[in-house]
Image (tube, rainbow, N blue to C red; front, top):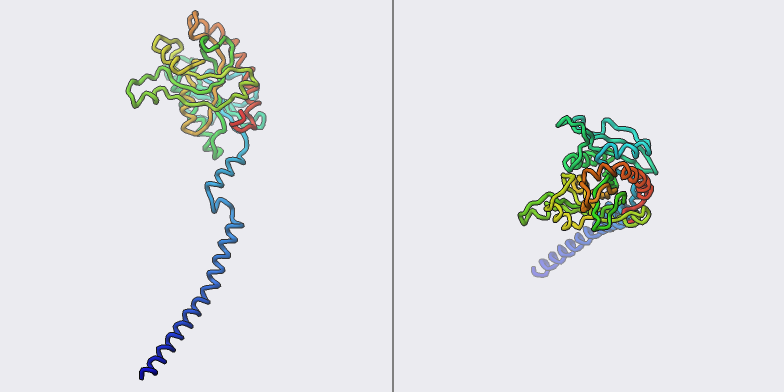
Amino acid sequence: IYNRHASTGAKKRKKTTRKKMTNSCRRTPILLATTTVLLLSSLFLPSNALDTESTSTMTASKKKGITNVVIAIAMEAEAAPFIEYLSLAEDADFFPKVTPFKAYRGLHEDCDITVVTNGKDDVHASGVDNVGTVPAAVATFLALQTITTTTSSPPDLLINAGTCGGFKRKGAGIGDVFLTTAVANHDRRIPIPAFVDYGIGRIESVNASELAKSLNAKLGVCTTGNSLDKHDVDDFHMEQNDASVKDMEAAAIAWSCSLHNVPHLGVKVVTDIVDGDKPTEEEFFENLSSAAKSLQEALPKVIAHVCGKHHHEL
């Protein structure tokens, strides 16, 4: 009886073993096929299916140079000669109808160029140019948003062009062209520890040292405030900002650029000496015409230099 049971058990074990071997043999081709597919996939599938991060790096490295540039100019009189020089056409549908902002567009040096201005004041019915941080920030934000929406990618660079005050202690003279290294606010004073850096709002500009050499331009920080003149408290904060030039829009424009992750650069021409002896408004109007001429000479050279280059080449 024992031997018969043992024999029967052995037979069962043999059958079980054969069954396992059969199942294993059946699974082996499947495993081999699966392994082969995975290996072939790793060889022939696009890299973005396997490694998104490496693909992003490759895409960034192969990205074209600068081909889409926005130029923000506060005053229409400063923008008009440049718009005419590039033969740009007004795009009446670019901004929402409720805004006073203007946009002029065209192609130059294989670059899509969009010049935006703040338009004229309708709210107070003064008819003067909308200068200052509020219209500059809103116009810039909407311009970048419109281009990003219509082209599926943000502009490559924003250039803030215009006149400015200069500091003789930093070597500025009337008619000098400055390229910004950074921007900051001098009249947004919030003496609460957590708000101090926000109030100053320093934002770095794109490095344009090669452009400065080609233009024979100077480099420096632009400090921004909503007043044309200044008082002693402003003086202190402008010096703290290590400012070479002073304007009324740059820091606000740079803030909007940061929201869209668009590099910015200021191209500023000096109309008055902030730490000089003459009243600011008097010197401003006295030199506005010559400074505007210097700006119009510089801007085409700036466009010729930046178009087609990568940011690190500026």
